[in-house]
Length: 83
Length: 83
Image 1 (cartoon, helix red, strand yellow):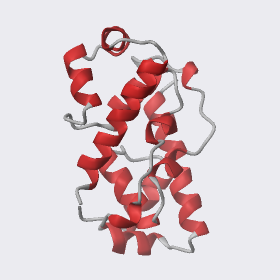
Image 2 (spheres, chains in turn purple, red; image 1 turned 180 degrees about the horizontal axis):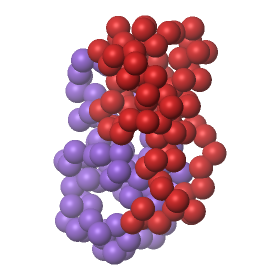
Image 3 (cartoon, helix red, strand yellow; image 1 turned 60 degrees about the vertical axis):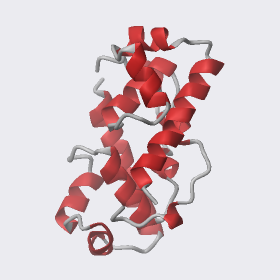
């Protein structure tokens, strides 16, 4: 399994969920992070490579602890380090 | 405050804590991740720039959910997106 691809999909889903819960639009996130709203959409669907820095921009814009972005079912044992 | 620098310090501390709890040495982590043990030491003290990929190598070597690496007190409200 592709760890990073899967992970980005899960994190993207969390970004989308928290944003909706906060009643924030993708345009709001663009305003707060400087990331174009079309790119925000791609991050939310896991189609962009996430860096830790970008992750923290989202955490800050959503005003959540970064661990909230990792709050999903995930079995690390299925993945090997090399992947 | 420097978000990424602080964050790396906190994550490094978590890596170190979990590794000790697991009775794993820095050499064990080198064996599992391919990251030189001297580098592991630097990551644990927050002196290396973490990428999401590296973070996941640590999660996999420590066999923990990635959110465990973010399990620390952290007030995102103190940080601005630009930092």
